[in-house]
Image (cartoon, rainbow, N blue to C red; front, side, top):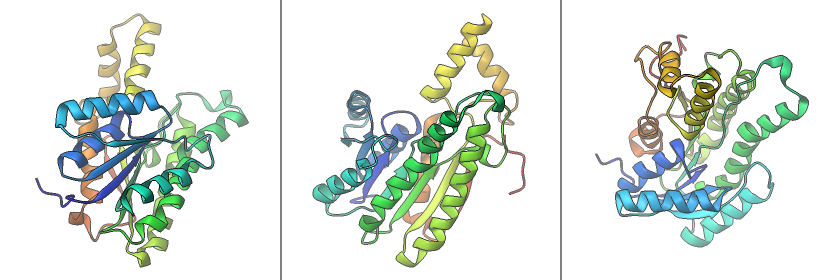
Amino acid sequence: MNLGFDGRRAVIVGGSYGIGEATADVLLREGAEVLIASRSRDNLEAAARRLSASIGRAPHIFVADMVEDEHAAEALAQHTRDRWGGLDILVNAVGGSVRADFATLSDADWLGNYSFNILSTVRAVRAAVPLLTDGRDPAIVVLGAAAAKMPYAHQVMSNVHKAGLLGLVKTLALELGEKGIRVNCVAPGRTKTPLWINRATKMAAERGVEVEAIYEEFSAEIPLGRFADPLEIAVMVAWLASPLASYVTGQAINVDGGIARGLL
């Protein structure tokens, strides 16, 4: 497969594990220069070692906490400018869900989840746009969730904030189109990331059952009958970031095994 990534420069925020790391895997294999950013140096170094072992190429790494440090995005942008002189692709894979009922959530919970899912994305995009303006086939891809289109029970914060990300992506596509920057969202369904692995392990321990029983329970709602592998999400991220998607912007594409039942 040739997606046209040779020589293109990509930053993946939240790239140290899960879908972010899988996206780094795909882009590195396709010839891109890749920098992964995360708040944990240990996680970044571990991801770089895994990728180097499997591909023979390692990403650059940069420690940046987009949630807690309001200056992290600007520092990452300056580092990118110093290293490459510009940027062609930004992937934002920061975010996640918390399983909780509405009545149990405090203001602090809501504000923390907003910062994690939306403000972190705003910061990353705002700092990257000046670099992307002069990029080659510039593209932004934001990781969202199928919950934005089909809310799940007991995940109200994710339902609200992932829907908010869709509004952000659509607005950015409208405003940045004149600069030639495309902006899209990939909305995964249930995926075997560390987040879901930890969640399933905890639920299995609480119920006294095997972890596989938890996966079977949650897979029953998915038409394809299973969780996604992170690489299955990453290939859609890569396609949207590639010149093959040169006329696609402002879209939120579900990669969810069919779990979202809506028509839009």
